[in-house]
Length: 297
Image 1: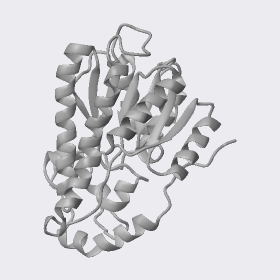
Image 2: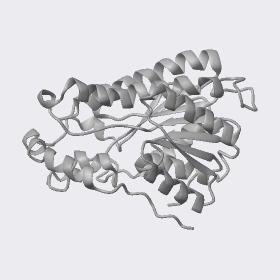
Image 3: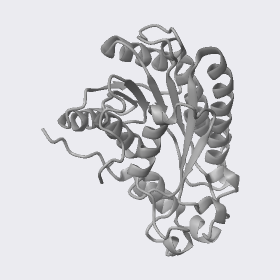
Image 4: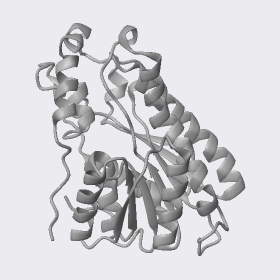
């Protein structure tokens, strides 16, 4: 699909994306690169990083990958510093790293609950905290007098409620709160715009395969206002809008990209069906290869 944006709207910008090597994160990385940005991606799995970087470079995108865990402050600090060292500055931080699995509240251990919050919410704040000195107005490596941009990938699960997703709902609610508070404080003090994107059901993603597995015949599209799933491209276009000058007066907002589905919550998905298939779905998702496009080199 042809982009509605000019190909140079992010020309000269440097973006760092956590979780940027697969799924929605990789699509945002790709579209940022196609629109002029240099891209650094951060992830825990070297094979995924290498494959994603190879793919991005095959498109002519200046790209580099860094291993790191957003839960570790030393990793966050190191990756931010290496990004600035490699590209000379940092303009855009996208927090797309996330953890998810299906589990009922009674079967979810406090440690499992904590793990998802550590990745999604604490990890998001940690990356923002370590990037501040580079993206704030007058920060190290910046060649302008304006601040940079932070985009946090959220979800719509916590707007009402969802079966087997209490940990993710809590984590994403915290992400939304971080977005609003940093937008107020860092927007005021450092001229940094902080916004979020809340994807709904997006086809061909690990999240969709977990939350709506093929075995559950729930006629998903019949309950959607637009009668279709979203695409990773849709999330990337929202990210481009917020990261470009088109969104220069947008701050503290989380854009919902779900075709209006959240308006019809709660989900039309029987809890018994989720319970029956959750273990099968988790086992399959752990064994399935991550879908990273092959290099065009």
